[in-house]
Amino acid sequence: MSEQTNHPVVTLKENRFPLFSLVLVILAFCLTAYMAYLNYEITKVAGAQLIRAQQLQENAQTKFLDQYAHFLYQRAEAERFERSFEVRQKHYSEFMGALEDAWNAVGRKNRQDLEQALHQLAKSYYGLEPFMDGGSRLYLQKRIAMFHNLANQLIGYEQNKRGIIMEDKATMDRMTREFQEFLYPLLFEPKREEGEQSESGQAKR
Image (tube, rainbow, N blue to C red):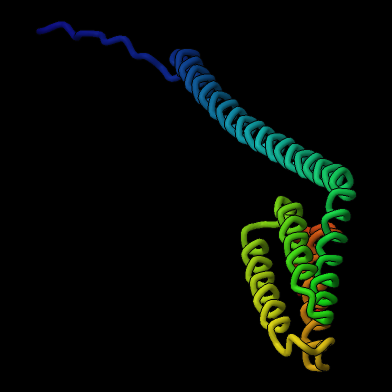
């Protein structure tokens, strides 16, 4: 008769502590992983906010520097305008005076006085030239050439008669007024900013 083999029986009560320890280890690992994830998300959000704050600061600094540079430019333009005012006024008065002298010479049929007046007109133009852009210089050169040709043409009419007819006087007044209307705003009215011009244009609409 064979002997019975006795196997040890491990009860649940005896394994409860190791299982509980294993559960605690798993929970601790999960908690550590979750804390690491939260730390990563917080760092990520904080980094994004820091970058955003730096961008806002840089934009504010750039805007401030642009405004300051614009202020310095306007100030320099105003100072340049004030310093050159007397020069522009001098050449402008000489230019307009030369126009009147030229037409008076035409009225008197005095070619010598006309040549002197046209010479003074050219000299005063060269004094005004530095204060004009390319388009303004070209326009004024064409108008002066027209004036020059018209004056020489009129003085050649009826050399034996004094004075000019009313049509010529009307032409004289019109061309003188056109020169004045073109030069005065160009030389003595400060340039408006593009933003102000656009706002005024929208207001008119």
